[in-house]
Length: 154
Length: 130
Figure: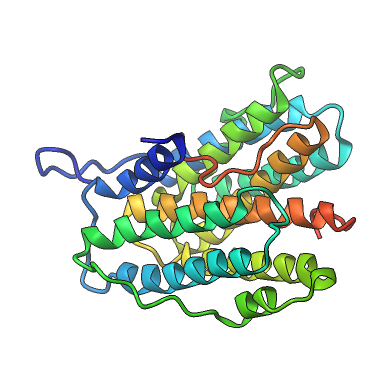
């Protein structure tokens, strides 16, 4: 198994710890929303090649795989088909000279999505995996802004 | 988190989890001597954490700042990020909003510090220990 596959498996394994399910647990619903965002982002980076950061499309795909392994634990075995959302479509369709700006906007929207999800998630493994993915998108955002000559913390 | 035999492990309390985050953040901030802006960002996170520790009934002074810089800043930044992620399950919704800000801020700082050193610090699962 390659190193990247091992990392994805390990991240997903956080969820293998039994979930603390409660009646109003929205974790599966939130995870499905986040999987859709990751799938769209991965597709957008592939279509907007070359990647602004080496390996960024694969990292988005790895996020999707880790989230899917979390969904498996809830018995949700299928995620919706991949569909570009608005920020991903902007990147996928951006001309070369606008791709970096579109990638920054996409990463900012992903940071916002995970930040909004963290207070809502219930299961410990789900929460910590989502937080780690939030960290990844925050790093993407900072690096992309630096590449664009912008304040990385803006 | 549930234990292997079906008994629930309550995990750390919110003050204890926040204190661990605060200690890690203060160690990071003390080590970032060559990057004043990142040091200032870390101090700001530490201030928010100290306020959250107090609000949760803990004592921020139980996580004192190191008296001098010690350790690799990037590694200490990663350790702070790991501590912020580990703390989240112990926190309530309001505290988790702070937790999300801590995760975002520490992750970005690690990426920028790594850039300055020519290291690849953009990872798929930072702070997860994988």
